[in-house]
Amino acid sequence: MTYYPAWSVSRLPPENIDFNYLHWVDFAFAMPTADFTLTWGDPAADPAVLQRLVAAAHSHGTKVKLSIGGWTGSMFFSPAVATDTSRHTFVSNLVTVFHKYDLDGIDIDWEYPGREGNPGNLKSPDDTVNFLAFLQLLKSSLPPTAKISAAASPVPFMGSNGEPLKDVSPFASVLDWILIMNYDTWSASANPGPNAPLFDGCKNSSQPESSALASFGAWTSAGIPPSQLVLGLPAYGYVSRSSNDGLRTRQDTHNSSVLVAHEGSQALFRDLLYEGALVQSAHPAGFEGAGGFEREWDDCSSTPFLRSMDTGQLVTYDDPESLVMKSRFAKDVGMMGVNIWSVDGDTSDWHLLAAIHGSMYTE
Image 1 (cartoon, one colour):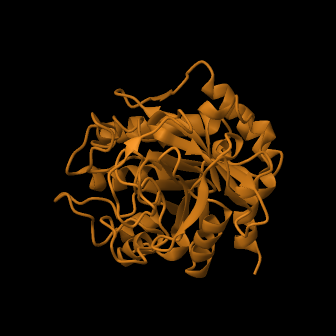
Image 2 (image 1 turned 120 degrees about the horizontal axis):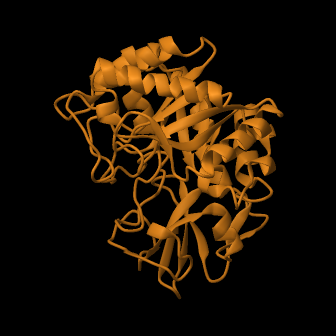
């Protein structure tokens, strides 16, 4: 599985995706509005891109869901699910879009029920209760073959007291699966910790709940079967300015623009390669540091990082080696699968997708 962001169309036309590695693609994003309809990041272009994605995917037997929300698109989720009237309006609009674009499902990426998420998002203590009622209505309104998924944080949905619920098992009857977004644990503007830890192997993390192992335990303990959980994987990393020689010390960092000038110092895996910080090699990971960067390994999180003493930069990211480890973990514990954010972060030779696919479908 993967996400396809609408804004990646110029970099990666949907017709150029290698669908042989993918069962599902989530088109990101459509967003709820104040009147419970849907809008697009680029209303003039995105619907046509979605149509192209659906046509290309279906021609290869791959299914497509429309993802609703996202980090900057979750402002109006709370009022959209707050009342019976708003839920019916919102669901009606989702069903219309489902049929109009010949979709196979709907993905709800509400970041986050009961929490603000992006500054300015509306929220209510009743968000999670209302979310369940909305999903029940959506499920009954879509065709039986339609799939409904939700992207979620490493901890279960929030209760009215602002704490993660101990029991979210009712969601298992209305969601086909839940994607755990096990990434963005540390970004370039905070501490140089791992972007997507497999586990807290050194028991020194300031966010011990944010790892593949911990999040799997949290969701299964709250009543979601492993077979209805999908592990989110990143095809990007963060570039920081740091004097660290490792990640465990969690020193403060500052954004850097020496290597890349991406907003928020986020860099796609492909950009690390194409901009010269990585080079393909015979290393077991398939890549090693270049251009003054050394590839090193953080045993605490089972993730790589790049370090340049000359530029004072540290890049936390994932590569085929660490992604395979997380994929095998998901397979070994009985999860439904993995989903990578996002397909445009891979190389033109699909090094990431190929490694992930191989680890999931071979011994």
